[in-house]
Length: 265
Ligand code: ADP
Image (cartoon, rainbow, N blue to C red; front, side):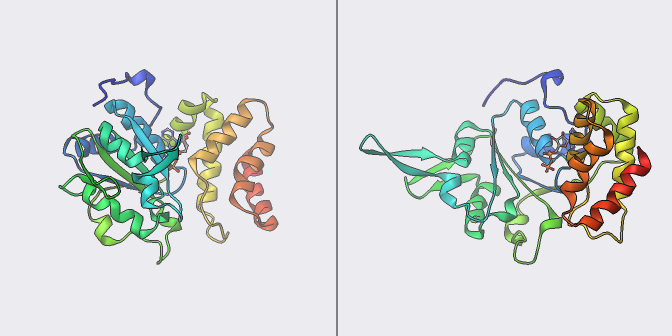
């Protein structure tokens, strides 16, 4: 196992919401896999990066998509210099090194792909590699972490109960106003007054019931707006580009959202 434990000062910045840091650490110590669910841009990926660094573990992140095959995770034979060589995929590498394999948006992956996770995600903790005949036993450091956004989920793209019930599940959501102000100032070193304004815009946009948005404004977009404003872009211009136009393509809705922004700045 990688023994390099980072100090708090060098960890990727993460502002916790409740007991997720302890829960994750205890899940790792007990060799349990973790599932993190929550809206896009609410800190899932940052949390995993923070925890990997805190525990001194190598981290392999895979952004899942509907074409992701089991070989993309496990590995494949490649031809080079006239011979065939086996090349480990990110999942196999994480198992061999005793690190974290993080599958982002796991519901996007094909069902047959998620099935390769099963023997790793229960008490067997093994990865059978059919093509090489190997059966890897995961060392104690190895941890499987998956995430998904329940908002995107449809009937066809839900996680099978047999997969889901192998994980300890952490539910993430948008932060409270005070915590989100803390995240913006911690992440961008912006003026707390600006952070408060952006968070108040987010609060209003998130409660707009009669506006048809696919997703609510994320903390990530507020961070973008704070960065643009911090480097001298006018607040309304920054909020249009970083927040409003990222939320909708509909002109009328965009103007309605801009009214909320203009009422704050
Ligand atoms: P996702 O949930 O989509 O994986 P990310 O983890 O990529 O979201 O978060 C998006 C951005 O929002 C991060 O890069 C960071 O700037 C900010 N962020 C969100 N939540 C937090 C948090 N709790 N602590 C620190 N930064 C956060």
